[in-house]
Amino acid sequence: MYAVFQSGGKQYRVSPGDTVDLELLEAEPGSEVSLDDVRFVGGSGEALVGTPTVDGASVIGEVVGDVKGPKIRVLTMKRRKGSRHHAGHRQRHTRVRIVDIKTP
Image 1: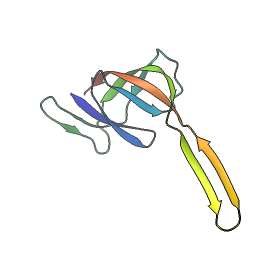
Image 2 (image 1 turned 60 degrees about the vertical axis):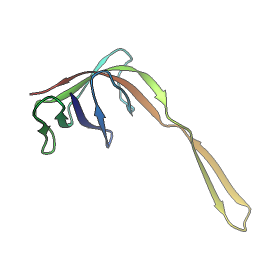
Image 3 (image 1 turned 120 degrees about the vertical axis):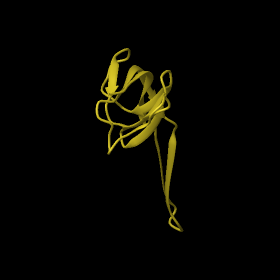
Image 4 (image 1 turned 90 degrees about the vertical axis):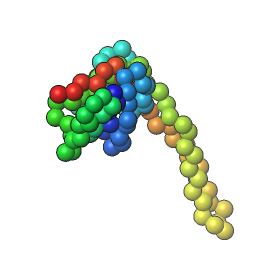
């Protein structure tokens, strides 16, 4: 069984046992989080397609901890001026292990 849900403006396809990095959530490591914006559930018999969400469906996950994403380097340069500006950024994510997919 798998589900497609939306969190932080992005959609994720997960199965029980998967680990995903979501946008930063306000949750403590070890706590349980319920993701209710489920768009699609499939893989076991009949597929449930939401309009836009599947009513009564949710994805249950356990928060593993906070992690940092890859470093993004930004270079702004104006030609023939000798003007350069260099910056970097690392986005923080919440790592979640998917425990269960609840269906209506």
